[in-house]
Length: 161
Image (cartoon, rainbow, N blue to C red):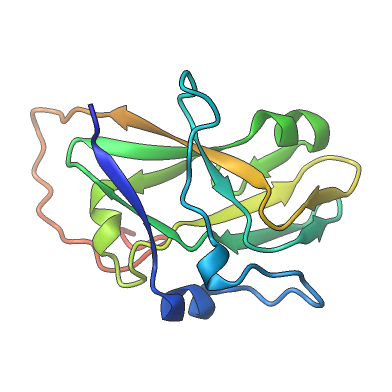
């Protein structure tokens, strides 16, 4: 069963959301690959870093992936560090688990998936341009009987208060 579709944000949105990395090796917009599973049995869709970075212990940054995802209502995309980065470098997501709601696709930033990471380890954390660094897994979710939310999403991070 297919419940979602990955696509790129516009080139304009991607450039607006790019952080400033001194002397960073950056992907061109046309080079950004869509997330994909490594094997037929993989649950997670790998996301690729569009920039070469080196995080010192304790440092953090936000990485714009250039990707958005159209998700059927009733499903959510959750983002996690790839195991190798967690085990080797103690890389963590700044918000522990990234939650991409189905209505995020229509956010003011085109639903651009931006991943905040932190190096919680004691050695430098290198991420090469084009390297898979986080993975996204789709889950079904359910509503409580008391559900009354009718609010519309507009912004990105923290937009629902």
